[in-house]
Image (spheres, rainbow, N blue to C red):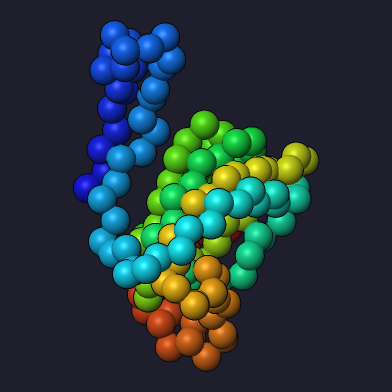
Length: 143
């Protein structure tokens, strides 16, 4: 369930500030005793980004600059551009790529990762597991 709406009219009477909801998502699971980390990720021009990995809990992000090729297990890859938000459920879902879609400029995004206590926020997936789960990956676009 992905809902977006502008809440600026809701806050207009209480303040001069404007709040615009970029993403409203009910995550499937927040681990008990969760830890939260906010980080910026900077991806060089044309770089494939972090190798396939997973997170112990949900991740919410916002692209500050550039364009990211984003792909989660079971979903086709898509382009997320500056000014757009994204999320992933974490847990057993493999995050295949967060590559820079642009060959000539850096792409930057901010993430808020919610993780299970005592577990790493990000764990790389090995080749054997990728091979065993390849049937779960959405078809790749033609080159």
